[in-house]
Length: 109
Image (tube, rainbow, N blue to C red; front, top):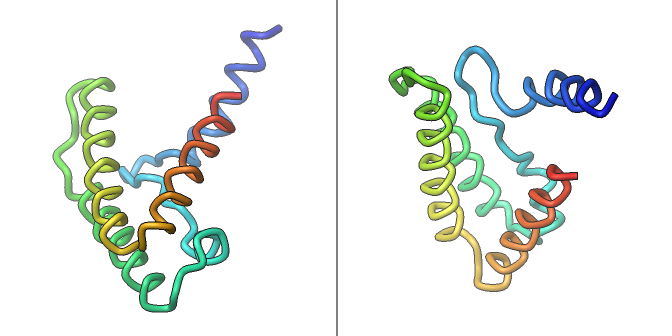
């Protein structure tokens, strides 16, 4: 029964993480606006960062294995977080880190 629930959860959540076109799931900047107290300029810059990384994901050469694809995505997310960090203030970066931790914990449940 537990395995069935895990499989069903995986099937339901998979489209949210990635799709056949190679998109990486991107956070909703509008949600970040309130959680991180973003200015309009910061929101625009974050939208640009997310859109650029989304485009790069589409243009990226397909990985030969699932493991390689995961590694490519991990590296892209790492680069994206660095770019995001350049846009945020020190306090916003701390809040962003906590937000990502909370999100990871929530996904692991």
